Length: 152
Image: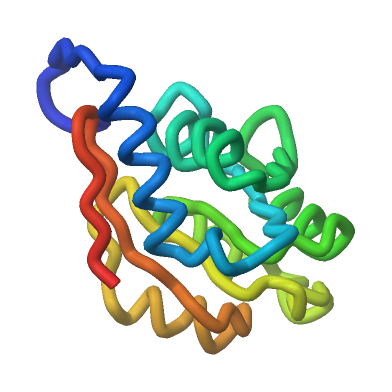
């Protein structure tokens, strides 16, 4: 995980593919063709590598990487210019995007859903993302090193 004492974990091929398959099913990739996911989360974590990279291979997604390092403004620009239909992020990343002074100028109408995970996700924040960013479907998840739990 990203908190507490470091711990070694062995991820099996089955575990990785299974997690990516079920996260894709849970958020609806199977019945949403031409999904374009904005992926600002790091690829060295399960969220980016499994929820992004492996899910892309299994579900035929297009991944959009907005910047080399995290940048909230770049996320908004990428969602608008690339017409992303989905956004990944940790609660802190969503707070940063909400706090961009020019948030209202971005056309985020293509964004149908999002996944918020990586640390505890306050319900107030999820509601704020839905209302201010007009993201219709937010899924709250919890990634760990060996298992993915989704609470819709």
